[in-house]
Amino acid sequence: GIGMASRLLATRLWRPLSGRRLGRAASWVRIERRTMSSDSKKPPFNFGPATEGDSILYGSCRPGYGDNEVDGAIKEEEVEGWISHMHDNGIKRVLSLLGDDEVKWYGFDLEQRMRDEFSSYTRVPMFQGDAKTALESAVTAAREAKEPIVLHCSGGGGRCGLGLAVAIGAGKGVALEKAKEEVEGHANVVGTKRKVDLKKLDKLVTSGNASGEGGTYLGAQYY
Image 1 (cartoon, one colour):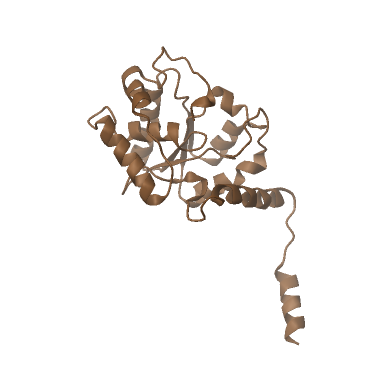
Image 2 (spheres, rainbow, N blue to C red):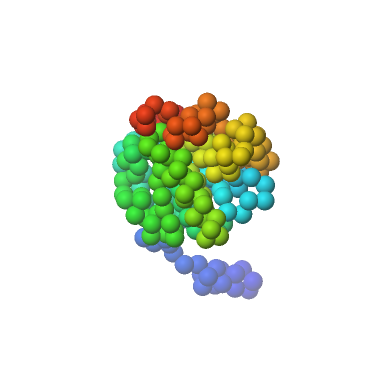
């Protein structure tokens, strides 16, 4: 009867998940639940365009974002959902704003995995060296190549907001307050969370990094 036919069809269509496929499926479920738990209408991974009409520059949280800020805590399977979401949205390049201490949270070579998955991967800690120039160079290269690039810090809020503000011209023809307004305003429209600290933005555009203290990275506690 119909019931038997349905069971036979289900049997033929069903394929068991195993190994890497099972790990990916499980990690997607965990990450989607985590990123969407507060509000089902919020974009997954805090992912969205920097400003209205920009098809190249995006922001997001880090791969595997969650309550796992311990050295070696993040397994490779936990970043699969993030990678898949970026591919699905046409992202070709990744600009990480994580510090040296934060990449230690990953129990595998995250940076090599990013290089394998995307056409370009760059990491620019925001509180050391000439972060501003490195950030601008990465975004300029993406625009010239017409390849969408995603900037991420940890949660996708503070440092990501600073990076997006610089990338749209803060301090170079765009007033800091205007850059803050554009980044935060569009985030409110699309449902992402960005915060542009004007004091840190001023340090970033005047000294080259957000510490403003000779390029000393002060850790991940900022955002």
